[in-house]
Length: 148
Image (spheres, one colour):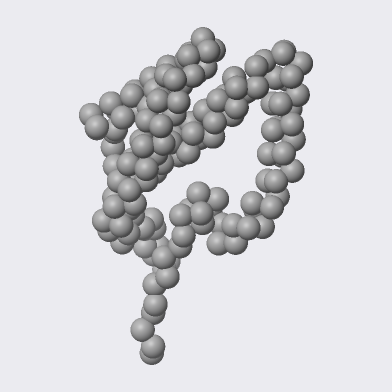
């Protein structure tokens, strides 16, 4: 019998939960486009400044990315590190949103850069933790059934 070859999936496969992510991604283009137009339309209707809308959109994207990698980082029970990382991430997102509302774009940009840095750190930590997992221990075991 030829040896079985293991083929690791990609990060995108994991995030989308499918082996053919582009089919799912293409199905999300329309809803994302509609949400983006709704976001811009509501901002124009509320007469928001364009810089406020740009920073708000950046915060939505950064918040989604950093929280996704923070979630992927948690491969075991919540410890002090994960708890503090979650609190600091939420504090940075909240402070960045407040900075945008107060037109303090210097602070907003600084916090956005911090969030990008956190996303990169969380990604590398999550990747190293996932590579160190013993996947045989993660397998669901069913009890043996009797024949009679």
